[in-house]
Image (tube, rainbow, N blue to C red; front, side, top):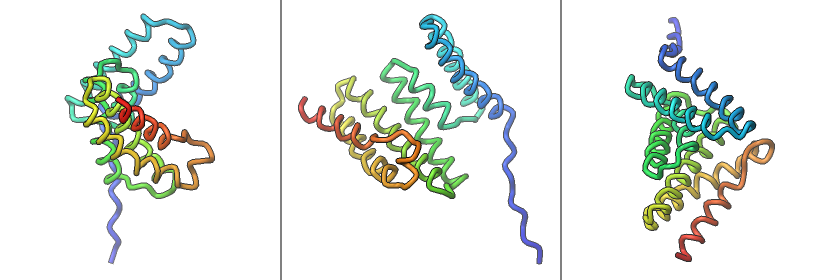
Length: 174
């Protein structure tokens, strides 16, 4: 009996285009920062926002594009929306492509914590302290698990757990 062939997901044209736009966005952000060109940076962010929203309207969303847009968005409401959508995409991506190594596991755990951390910071800015604390408390186990992985200390961004704990302490003071 033949074993069934594993289906390979073919990238959709909108998805391929979105990935290319994301890579271009990241490169151009660095150029704008190097040249201290705030007007060009604002225009770049607006263009990328439109591209991400257009792709989402076509049914194509990725965690990296929503996360990147969220990191370059100043409105608390929009940051919350971007990071919520990133979390939604992460959940789907993890089901479709489960991690097979520590780097993959670290990536999913780290971004689950980081998105919650960023949403919590936006809530705190809006004065929604209870919501912010709840999200930080949700984020903490993900950050802890990511930092416990052997791959973490070698080359990856660390101490998110400490940042979350610090933010929780600051909120307790208020």
